[in-house]
Length: 225
Ligand code: C5P
Image (cartoon, rainbow, N blue to C red; front, side, top):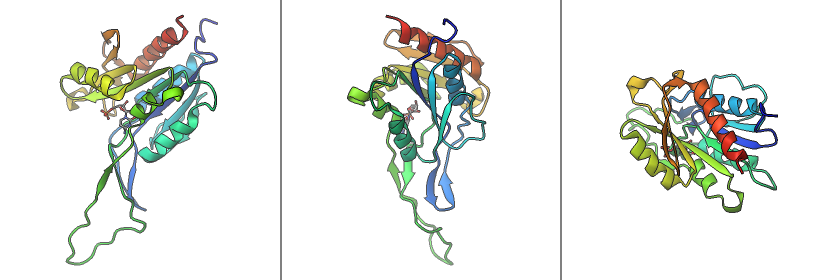
């Protein structure tokens, strides 16, 4: 039926921040709310897709009709995404909307203690896996369509075009997150959709409308011959 163009299609969406544990009680995080990723998962499900949402820690409710896998760290998020790839056949679309921490910490097994007169502990960072790049380079398991986001504060389109090439994904949704725009944690987003065909700039829209529009574009692409 026309209103469920993604019936029979499988989708994976990442959303939210990651928390990178420092010790059993502390972590490093970022300000992602998960609103855009969760809205995309809901919009894909509305169009009939079988959706797995891999979400970092957020305060949002689980979208209806979506399988939700909750994770904390970037490493856990990558493992959950890999586990969500079908055993046979290909995932139709992966949308990486999570704000994955670039670096993790070698977790201390016990709570770091203050010690009188001692210098503060140093936190050594190590690079996290890049989930978008990993899925884009998954060879025979690569999803048919891989979509990433680019949060930029300047030269938004140029940086996003370069990011699309670097990550090896098909589309990048570039958004301006300079603090004046209020995108992080806010309800609206201005997106430029970058593909091999060029740049399509969308108006400033509620994140739910960005999600609906993206889901429709995904449906058009997946069902076109
Ligand atoms: O490199 P940058 O973080 O700007 O790239 C943003 C895009 O890459 C987003 O789609 C984000 O979900 C994805 N990403 C990822 N894993 C990382 C870092 C970013 O999937 N470790």
